[in-house]
Image 1 (cartoon, rainbow, N blue to C red):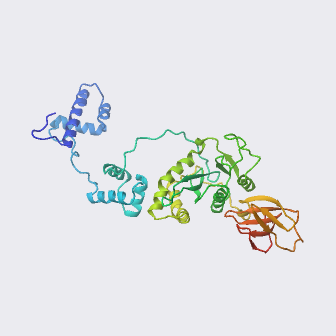
Image 2 (cartoon, rainbow, N blue to C red; image 1 turned 90 degrees about the vertical axis):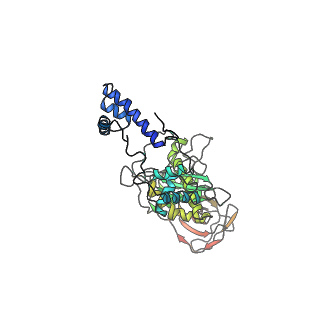
Image 3 (cartoon, rainbow, N blue to C red; image 1 turned 45 degrees about the horizontal axis):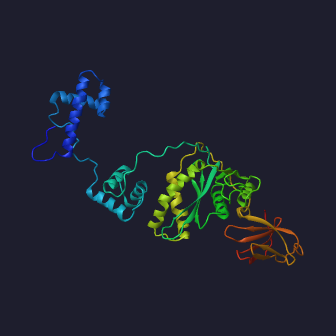
Length: 403
């Protein structure tokens, strides 16, 4: 290769010479019948048709002209410099930290970006705003999804700094359909527990209907586990397990981290995207974040990440069993004391006078603690009273309710 005097060969000129030399070598082997036409084309990384064209040009003019007329010419659909500057400035000033796919979605939806994901990724890499990712990913074994929506749901929680303006973590509770990856319920709480698990199931049933089974980890609010790391006790149920049984929902325990892979990967997506969106929208409270989750983020997330179930029919069935609050709650028995009161978690619940009987002394009643802390007192199916979280009677009207 001969370099021009007095300077350094430009990159396009170097590429031109390298391609010529490579073609000359492979074409010589082709002419000597050492390789076939398709093999020569494959070695050059071009189609057989393109190889024929370049062979004809080489025989006619020996590439005295250009080997590839595209080299050195700007692409027809090349973005304007102003568009590149606008996009890089937008990422740097407003969306710093977003992954490329997340940023590209916002840029197209909110700022009218007309170029594709690959262009955005390459441009941000060239500008030094993101690091070049490694090729490929972790090797995973595929677990078949349930074929129909409503056959099995996952529920799990993730502790994370979801709201960056706060100096403490919150728990995000997610209930997700195995067949479609559709998030049927999602909200933030101070700490995961029985009430948050009840709420996830309640919201799912109210929105979609009663489902067949629920897959969870072996946390203490889900299961009783006699030995640490051992099998769960399916006979001594937790309050949550009792609620599922009362609804007729099968409860399935996970025995390995791999078994929860689908929900774990979903949380990685949420941890990458949700905090950035909350910060971008100036959300600094858990209440505002839950409102944004329900009205904006989850509908958009489901539209983007949900998949089509193998069978179009749904296994969800409408709930017609009465008030879900009376099932998805803590239920404990107490014996009424001589002054017609019941002791419950440090509170004294006074049973009001009614026309059904003179008193309830020494009878066994059921205390129900609902999601949020309010209480209910029942004698069989008969409601004796509703109380606030401090134990104050909310009403004195006796109502017959289904248990």
